[in-house]
Image (cartoon, rainbow, N blue to C red; front, side):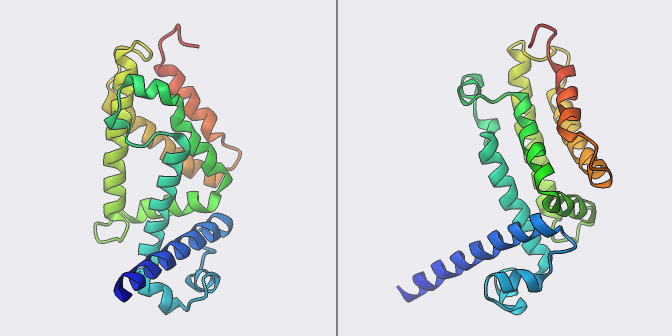
Length: 206
């Protein structure tokens, strides 16, 4: 019984660290989020934080996973590969739902900076974030391609599009625009992506 209680407390502390790191990175950016500041926010030493996460990089990967879960929940777009057109319509999901997390990213530049920096570093297979990004892209392409195929077959998107290729293009566009926006905040990321999606829609769509 004591072990179960200790385990539950450990999970709760890990969640507390994640929440604090998410808030600090969103406010201060990747470079401004020190392990010391995160540790102080949850009443631990740096060594104490590293008891729950093997490294600062592993903590940041966990922060990105948490951000993804929150974004999916907000957009109502989780498990897209498992649902049909009726379920999509019932949930009010369209391809434009892809833009919702991009709009949110504008409000949390620190997390956008973290994602962009780690995405570049994760091209090294030895990096702590490598598996996260490989899995994320694979899952995102699968879910988006499924949604695009359903909308295309229902006549809502152009009949000549390749769902997997378009899913790849949307993700590449989003990631590229995030880099552009970090360099120049005047770039309107959501508007650029909305414009691209409009090119995919059939002429009679509103």
